[in-house]
Image (cartoon, rainbow, N blue to C red):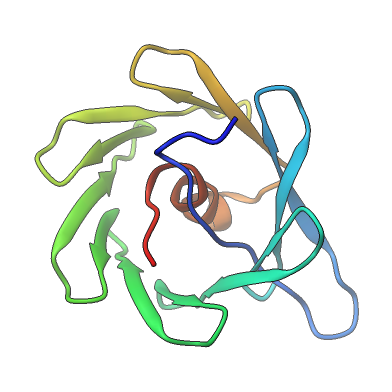
Length: 138
């Protein structure tokens, strides 16, 4: 399902390419988050990067956004475009709820309809999965 709320990002390790899977609501793989922050699409093409400091880059390494430690999501010009709350709620820049990230790996829209799933994504990479579904910056 290509929703307006789709976006990027995943991670890659140097030798062992362990990756976490991002799936749509029908359990079809739509992307991977590698251990180093590389985000790949379903055909393993690099879509971008999420750096350990929260910087989000496109596939050409241009900075397109930031995910702050407090859950604030900013575009490349540092304007706040959203928030990832500690309870799993995802909000836009005006604090309207866009959806929810459940601890069981389910990502839902504001009406609680399932958008997709993040499988085997550790908590420090969940923001990458949220970015993939809710914030499309290019």
